[in-house]
Length: 136
Image (tube, rainbow, N blue to C red; front, side, top):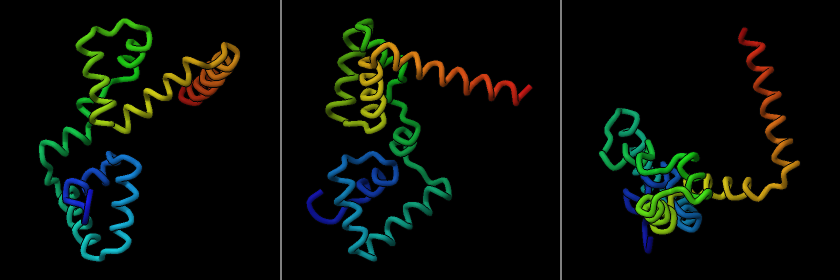
């Protein structure tokens, strides 16, 4: 983004699909430009009316993103080579913020000491039991 953000930049901004640096630049431009804020408002109104492009729907529903289960297959070394190659392309080239966050979380959890992981599982189980009791 050299000058004013493009419509695609503003749509990516709304989808939380920008890098931190680009996000900061778009936010700065929005602060400084009333006309840019009007363009952003029009984009938001179009979305509210249901006017969507195929690309916007694809990004919004994250159709190319991997599930946490698929990512764990890569961590365990059981993902096939083609899928692994696409995953790294998705992370390194596309720089999907959702997949980056999930990947970092899975890697961090894999490094957890056993007592910490067990404590997290116990806490999750306890909270789930409480929820199930309230529903019955």
